[in-house]
Amino acid sequence: MNTPKARIQDVAKVAGVSTATVSRTLSNPSVVSETTRTAVLEAVKATGYRVNRAARNLRTQKTGAILVLIPNLSNPFFSQIISGVEQIFRRAGYSLLVADTDNINDPDFRLVDVFEDGQADGIILLDGYVPMSAITSLQGTEAENLVVYACEWAETEGIPSIRSDNPAGARMAAQHFASLGHKKVGHICGPKENVLTPMRRDAFVTEARKLGMEVRDEWIFPGDFRLVTGAQAADMFLALEERPTAVFSASDLMAVGFMKRLLSEGVRIPDDVSIIGFDDVGIAAYFHPSLTTIRQDRPQIGRVAATTLLSRLRDPSNVDPYFRHTVPVELITRESTAKPSDG
Image (cartoon, rainbow, N blue to C red):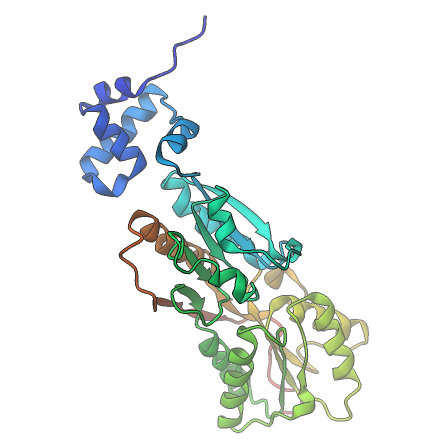
């Protein structure tokens, strides 16, 4: 015999509140007291009540979904950001849609279409390369305050940005090399047009020189955050007549590609060259030698981005077009850095 499905009236009876209060608690929990919220959620659990999201979305003209746009789904860096986003929106009753911007080949792509086509209620952008025309399509629409940048960004008024303290992380890398006694240091850059690339490169080079270390132009290697460009940087490093004794990579993946290539050629790490990455992705701790790196608090980036967007969804008129939030970074010391062998 099938057990009848719990109704909202059943939840209200168990919680000792009205059906309107139950509905308000489930759709917008921040507007009720903690006592009421606890009573309703416990009643939901006790009765086995399930929200009919499809019916609610039809009634409110909302999709109940958030779109997260990522530049490369194969990059493990983004997983913890998505996890942080999901933590916030799951509690608020939203589901997540994730799309790879590398697969968006339409030159006429517009962010406003996501809203007008009923695909999502809000967007979190992890890609600073999204064309400006796609972003400006939101101007003057009801959705213009419902997009948030996380990690990467473009200098666009009206879109809040949540980012790591990239310059501080690059300075930490230079300071760590200096503390070990290195005098000659190099850098593997991120993608040429990426907003993060000059921030990390310039802060590292400036701090290194300030601390008395030498940084030559030929010790600055191009890259694009991928493993393969780390290996290519290693080939350039191997071709040098005089090499730096330490290299700071703008991403962990490039650092691992760099290390793997050098190790295959008999270069000893950290005896012959010390290496620092940036991100602290999972492989950093398990590669051999394990990678010293700058840890980004990726779950926190996701949580702050989600909280920022959620507040705009609840009140699109009450927004700060210049909102910026910087998440601190941390130096994680492992096996890939040591004193120079001649020091």
